[in-house]
Image (cartoon, rainbow, N blue to C red; front, side, top):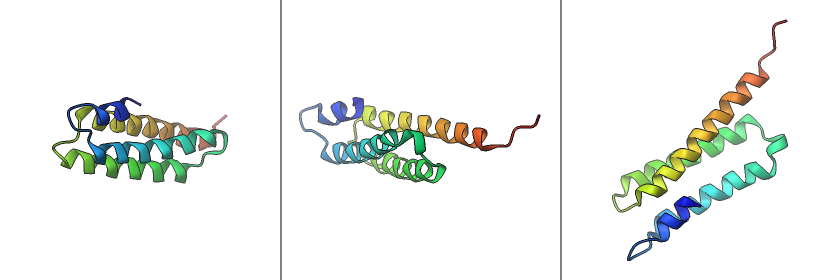
Length: 94
């Protein structure tokens, strides 16, 4: 939500940022809806899309920094989730 607000602030709202952050939020919301059954490939795909969106917005000098920061924050959380999933799928040694 921080990213959405940041894209709308200023004299002129940054449409590209709003579009990208909305698409990223949609993907993350989809993961949340199926959180009990989320699979590693779904997390990996979402991570890939968010990483590309962050790079695209980072290349656009007029993108609000808060938008890029919000996407990078989501990327960090998804990377943590991916690591947790990998750890939990390892067989335990007893």
